[in-house]
Image (tube, rainbow, N blue to C red; front, side, top):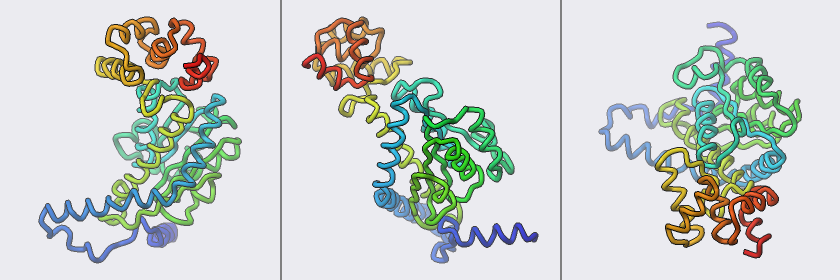
Amino acid sequence: MTTEHRSLRSELETLTTEAFRPELAEIDTLPTLDIARLMNGEDAGVAAAVALRLPQISAAIDGIAARMAQGGRLVYAGAGTAGRLGILDASECPPTFNTRPGQVVGVIAGGPAAMVTSVEGAEDSAELARTDLDALGIGPADSVVGVSASGRTPYAVGAVEHARALGALTVGLSCNAGSALAAAAEHPIEVVVGPELLTGSTRLKAGTAQKLVLNMLSTITMIRLGKTYGNLMVDVRASNEKLRARSRRIVALATGAPDAEIEAALTATDGEVKPAVLVILAGVDGPTAARLLEESGGHLRAALTATGG
């Protein structure tokens, strides 16, 4: 074993996410239902671990939203499971919130191929992270979230260090206390979920914790940006029949209008939900609704207030 390998092994042994649990050493001998109960019990504690970091999460969201309101982007950077979770969250923003192409982006060590297969050595390259961020032209208007269960992955740490040097807002999301990723980021978020059911398998509790936090970062940021009206997704992009049906339902829930009026409003706004709601509630035409929303920065509630609605 080389000195480098011994050093890495020693480092991993100090991480909570890598800790061995002797009490589970014979889990493979248990009935399936017992193993399922164990896993379910493990997962039950994840939300509580996230709850301990809500102040840090909220501060990061306010910073991200402020920059995005000025035209900045939200970029997730990670390797393996962490990178895949970032790409998943980013890919769901356009249909859910009608974000612009490239407004929320996920980059993963090893590129698109790493979404479905392991790319050897990619996670160990901070230089690769810098290259990926430079390809996006990261600058002071942007926010970069490094995601790493261990908090030591060179790709995630390198991304945050480089983004911070470029003036971007930086967030470090990890599942170990005192991590290098937290030290590198302006907004450290360390959700400590404890050792995994399977030693070192951080796609389990750590992955669940990361998914919960990423859901918060994107969803609450979009709420702050006016992408919702109450708890309705008024910026949903109706790209298929299911979403078109959802659009009609959202307008109905927001306005209480009859079907014929809803269809007329959606026709007048080219199927866009937010201006359709404004057409009905403020009694304006489609172009006026579009103008009012533009003047209010896309915030439907503010546009309604401006019309006295």
